[in-house]
Image 1: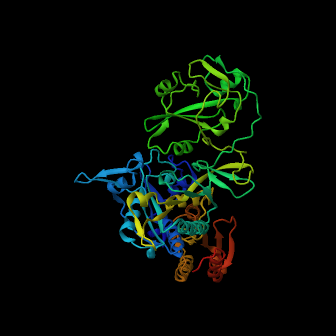
Image 2: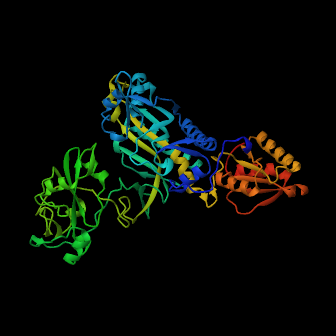
Image 3: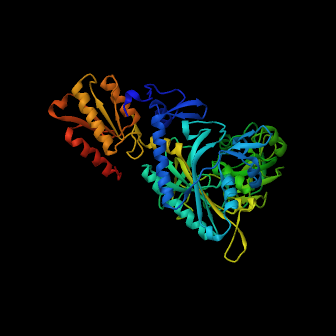
Length: 570
């Protein structure tokens, strides 16, 4: 393709709306354009990258024996009502009615659709195992779309669904997808880790996220410094520290006027944060939930929601609700005499001695409080892991990094097949529910994650396998007939070889051409200039700072060499 014929418009300035490198560079390189908040149009170079990622995904999925399928993006509400998720998805679901007042949604995910296909098409164990996948646009009405395509309202996803006759079969299907995902992200040149994850609204017995380490990631990922353990913060179990046993002291109510925060309490009681337990009040589907954690810990809301059996509407309680539950102003909540529907006590708190809590009376706190003697509740793991906590696998020290989720695999089990009646006849002639798995990859997000890991001050540094074009040929002076002739010949030779090649035949200064080439991220650049009089051109890799002067005859071999280095075929 010649740039003079391409629809491409690069930007020198960073758009004000773009906060992270991938968002900035996708806009600046002309790969996408914003249409509305969280909604983008992909331009010619952008769609080429997306299609290459899709093709890698497709190739690896096909290797596992999965079969491609395409479901509708417009889904009837009846399917979601069968699974019980019509209300669970909440406000993120785009809902609409047809002219007959029938409820539909724009698909945010497709478990129900594939389960419906399976119950209508799979009759016998002889048809199992089966894995169907699609690559399709999803729609979610994000409350706060941000970071470009990292969190958008419309995105392309590869979602696959496996169907097996038993748990053993599901385990096999799950591992096939685990290996396929590992290969996919490796081929995309992503430094990616598989981490234990919470299944969330998808349900099921287990799941893993494929996380790309990134400073701009919205998720926190926990890693062990001694073994290969890794988990999403939502999932990582917090192992309580050993406590030095103390004799119970007398419970005292202490006046603490206008003192609410942990910092103020530490100064007032002249002690440390680990001698306090804070009580936070939440509202969950109309019920009030009180959660206790140590004063210097953060509540893990996902663990709380799981502990109460799930919740559609889960939020921190407002000041009025706190007052009803505690009979006090905000800042004085405590477990003794609290009027909540449920009290959850973090295991760490249950092992503490003689600690300080709110008294449920404005201006007062209790000291020398002990679990079991002074209050009781449901004990469990309700806090976030912190740096230095013990690894649940080997006991080593945990570290925390930010990451971007690019893929997620779930063991759904029979959650959807039972609720929707998706069964098969087994070897004994008995009716059994299909055992399911679900496997998703965000195509747009993968593209953005690659840019986050592959960019520099001048623009994107695409890996060769997914670059919009492999090579760009740049004639320095387009009015020079000999330069144009050589450039045209190289352009045609490379095309004939199967190389995806651009020719910058625009009547622009060579500096502008170089800047655009670097910004877009073309892996190889061939500059045709004055040295053609010596039979030479300049060859430069996007990731190298120096040009290499080579003979015109060497160009093809040089390009081939890069394909071999990257394990790519021409």
